[in-house]
Length: 118
Length: 140
Image (tube, rainbow over all chains, first blue to last red; front, top):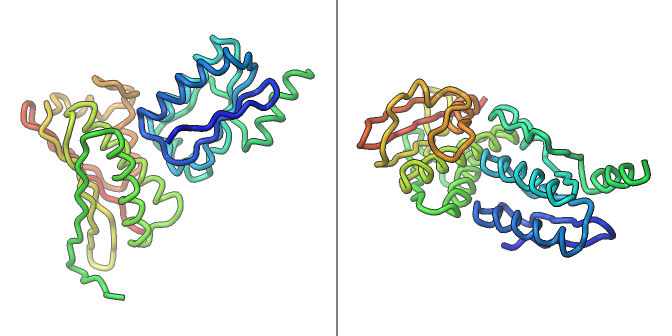
């Protein structure tokens, strides 16, 4: 299933609708790389609330998305990692190094607004 | 509702050939784990273990099979995940179980990470023949 990417002011919000296959996750990466350019977005929020598990591939791809978007001049925040998912990631040794995270969409937007006014 | 026989070996076999099979295996594993009485985080850990084991099959052996089943030891109930492939096998198992070691495309966290998520972990591998990883988790 394709991940809808919505434009909200200077930000893009990609909200995962279901568990994604590896190929779909890579499609999301490619779509975001293109959309930040088209929309001249300064911030991207990837909402993973719906994910019931984050394995090494998903974590690695989300890190890659954040790093790639940084090179495109956009900041990325991953929001909505659920408590059980976070606990499991810690056990697995997955850290999402260098990636900004926030509790939920609201906090993600607040992070960007702070950054722009401050 | 039928009562499961204590000796029953309800087995779910999931062929692992494409990336979407990982999602299917995870769903089936979650369902079985919840049925057996695992709670919240433990179900997620089982799902993550299934993901990592299936991914190892795809990365190293291209295809294989995942077997999910109930296991019972006296009053203890648990879940077994078995990942079976006829891939190249692992030459140095000790090395493969170290964090950060990877010959494929992973972070090298697949096997050591899976080991931390589960209660029991066993690996049999023969170079040129294949690999069987068996992991168990017991309902607390």
